[in-house]
Image (cartoon, rainbow, N blue to C red; front, side, top):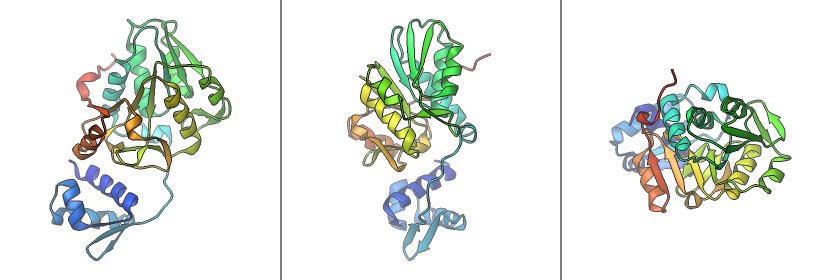
Amino acid sequence: MPAAVRRARMLNALRDREFLRVHDLGEMFGVSEVTVRGDLDHLAAQGEVRRVHGGAMSVTRAPVERSFEDASAANVAEKQAIGAAAAALVSSGDLVALDVGTTAMAVAGALRRREELGSVMVLTNGLNIALELERAHPRVTVVVTGGTLRPLQHSLVQPLADRLLAELNPDLAIVGCNGIDAERGVTNINLPEAEVKRGMLNAARRRVIVADGSKLGAVAPAHLCDAAEVDLVLTGGSASSQSVSALRGLGVGVEVVNRSHHKEEL
């Protein structure tokens, strides 16, 4: 596991539990205590944790939501592979609920490229998602939820979305998140968007979470659903084996996709 990924997951674990010992972190991530101390020193130098005798404590701070544009540069290959795998789940005639975010945009792009599909309807609260799928008309019909615009993610939030979701029965909900953890469930950083995501998951017959590896084991403020309520998690190769195993232990289907799922558009 790359040091940057390991440190990010250590930070998430510390924020979740507030204090962890060096020994516990070593066992959790399968590395030596010397490596753990180096990681904690690095996080402390960035002001993310406070070193105490025998371990470290998290530094409480409000989580920061990145804009769509800022998040677009992170884990690009993983998101494209996840998007292709999610799009492969869609069949002609399906009604699909697709929410917002950079991984959802990768799903939309992969759906647009599936020229063999027909009579697909996509319900979305993402304006950029709708514009991406407009290019697949008439194979794909786009229904936008309506609501109040959040420019940070180009998303529409309450009111109105819940009224539309109450009248539709999606075959499939493909939803992104900021964290999915076996104990704390599927979570999101933004409360207004969390309401719409939760509504999509509740309305659909099949629930699919799309999350690059950095989201596994992470916990954000807003709870969407318990992990055991998810039918399938599509993630990437950077996901920790411990987090994948923990989810599978709950009976959740987890597919770790690779770049071969994604074919670059010429």
